[in-house]
Length: 236
Image 1: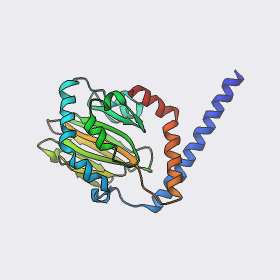
Image 2: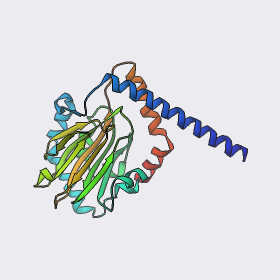
Image 3: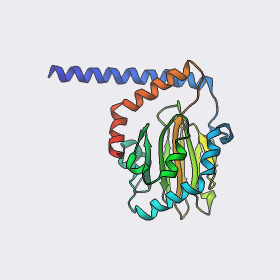
């Protein structure tokens, strides 16, 4: 019993120390960088990804035709279940928190080759938002990671489908990219009668030394945390 209590205290202390480190690093990042959305032209690798739009979309269409039951994102964690109701948000993972999902990458070779050009790539999946679905307001777990969207399937009524980060709104355009800081409060919606599908990527934020080192440490600790490891196990 004493051994169990010791382990509980250890994990509790470790978790608190980790949260404190994340808070400190996020504060430092917020002082050194500004902006919610970023110009895609600022990232050289985005040009290469957009050039691969046709083969990436082709592999997505093959998945939609072949895999009728693409997993629901809410099954991975309580957090995802909290922000969407019903079976409306689905995903097909290629990378999860730095771990390559071999069985999924094997059926999407062109997409896999393309995303490996992204420096500091962490998580990649096809994100499918069903018609008349809204992801309620939430924030991402950590400011040291940025989010990238390549729009693959956008409803014809594209203005009914968008993302809001605090007071800024963007709509997806097929074949075009969005980059943003998801640590701000944000929500997304698809009020159309068609599905919306994006290539969803989380990647390491580029920072100057020594903040870049602290960021790598936090990302490593997050990847190794029990919560993330359980999510990766469910995906794999």
